[in-house]
Length: 403
Length: 177
Image 1 (cartoon, chains in turn blue, yellow):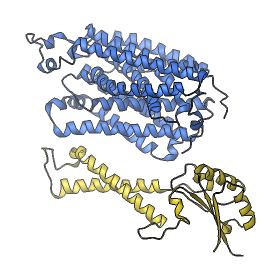
Image 2: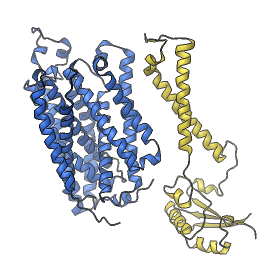
Image 3: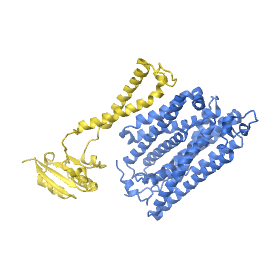
Image 4: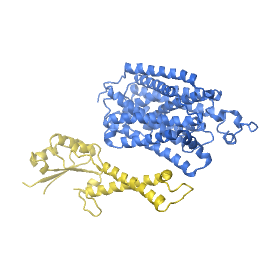
């Protein structure tokens, strides 16, 4: 099979629109700061955190999936690996933005993280909080930042190395680099298994400092993974429409649809498990999280759950639907946006509390701005290597994928 | 002229696939293939229609969902209201999260059992039924393709045999029936 179109050219429309989107994002960022009158611009910071984390999560999920394909020696996805690679090229930028937002909290520019206030740990201070003080060993500044740097270092290291080996393979060929990535993929998965959990506690769960859930890490991880698979599917359909990936057949599309479907079910399962256990046991220290959402965001919470469960379930359950790109794209767009709102709801109630006035244009503008940045980095990364890993040992098997 | 049945045996699934493609391209209609495991991509080649088992399963599971919703309402709310763990009773919707696991399990139960029973009935493979595969080795590591002259009226038995021998055959048996 010949791969006639290996070099990706970014369509001028995408260049133009991603720049416009980034411009809109910048305007929203500045405008949002001006019109936000909450204390310490809490609402403004909270929205940056949501977007910073969401797009970083999409990129991180791509690296997880990439490593997973190597560790499991999956062949069908070999031809698609450059899509995931291009997605995780956003990781250094994503980590940077995320760390900036959190560092601003450490410098008390905002109070998204209640526990960063030293007074809550001081027993003689009127703001002393026994529950937060009890978490001091884990949420002390030095240990927290040590973890943050460990995440950043690990993720950036692997994102650069995977890319480097992958591009080398295109010229060198052979199986050495393949088996190297197989081993390193497994090593990364070990780090990812721990870090994806602890990172979700650190960045998201610690916003609601008084609350904890042992399921939270899994829940965030599944949300991250489904967003990744959805973005990758949309990107694949788009690239195929532009005339690239002639070797990708219905079976590949079908498998991508299966991932969207399956991980949506995983997310629904974990969301519901976490909710039901807390609802059933009804212990005050556990229900605080849902109490806040019940009081102020009831409709949104249930809408997110039902959309993220029912849309993929009913629209993608049939085989023909997973092979129909129109179906996939429509369902995918809904799932992607709805999972953004899932992260939105993880951050907003704990940071802005009863503040229920939303500046819609600011939130939308920021989301669009980050989308523009992500798409720009994704498409630029795609141009920097062959679209298809021409010397991947599994490429031939991948080209003949049929189910 | 009596009808003839060809049982063409192959010792590799790839050889079987190649042979099926070659024979179908020459206009032969393959009646069936006996294989120890599902050979991916074979069904469309020999013209087997997509199974509707998945649709049936979905309907069984939906039936299960509806039955379980009715059941939880009837047993736990209507007929004998129960108060477990201080959860409010007398209202199905307020207790719904607690009922979701059983609704889910019952849906899976109905979907899986309905699908399995339908499969057995449709294929006639009920317990105690005689085996219908032509050669017991097809349950081990061999693949048998069945071709009958009846379905290939435009060709003579000799022509069919000639074409079959053009493929990578392991063993060929021709019977009249």
